[in-house]
Amino acid sequence: MMKGTVNIKGVTVNASHGAYGFEREEVHPFTADAVLYTEDIDCGDELARTCDYGKAADIMAEELSAPSVNLIETLAARIAKRLAAEFGCDCSATVHKPEAPLKVRFSDVSVTAHARFTRVCLGLGSNMGDRKGYLDGAVAAITADKDNRDVRVSSYIATAPYGGAAKGEFLNACLVMRTLKSPSGLLSMCAALESTAGRVRRQRWGDRTLDADILFYGGEIIDVPGLTVPHTDMCNRGFVLGPLCEIAPGTVHPVYGKTVADLYAELKRREK
Image (cartoon, rainbow, N blue to C red; front, side, top):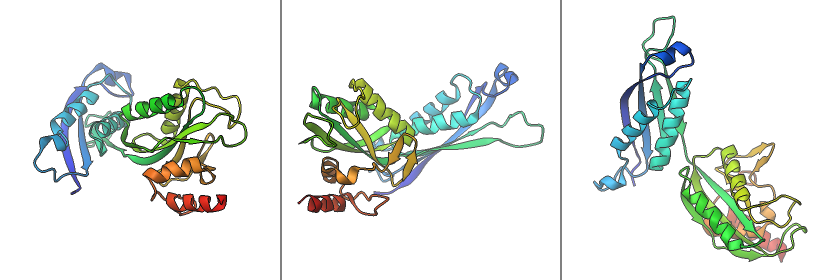
């Protein structure tokens, strides 16, 4: 497989974007360029396997023609993310505003935004009601989200409750995918999945219709209010490491520097 780029330059639309009122009263030219980073540039001369640059150009023009926004940063980010979601590859987009209201002589003002996919691992669990139905629903919603690509799901496994509060047997699984979502955006997605499943948080580690946890976000270490990644207790949880080992055994824990397969083997030795 050959990596390469598809470059589209100079898509121009007259529009009324700008932070000042007078900019929104008249139309001005806005131009967009885009670079799509494809993993399959050697596609065997098959149109269906490459990025359709005609469609890409139409998307760029649509975003430039959208209702007025204050910032060309907004336009660039929207174009980059929409192209990445459409074609499943990393993308950068540059928006030019050659008639920006500056008081000095200039030739152009431009902003570039990047949309990149990150490989993430999630853990799913349920021990109330239709456990398989809740997991299936979460997987279906994740897969349908255009921000997510290449979704792979482990086998579902039945496990005893963990932590001492929950009573019913769990059904657990792990999921690996590429996503355009930021860590906070991914956390919001997980919360929405739990809410859709009717989860009510009454007790830590208690019974729940659905639990959706971020295990890994690329190789990043994140510790902010409400989100710690990698998941702090995953190395003690066979119901996490087992399914994850099935689909992503070589994933390296960024804190411990060990693969998921190594961590699972260590856990099994400790449990003997």
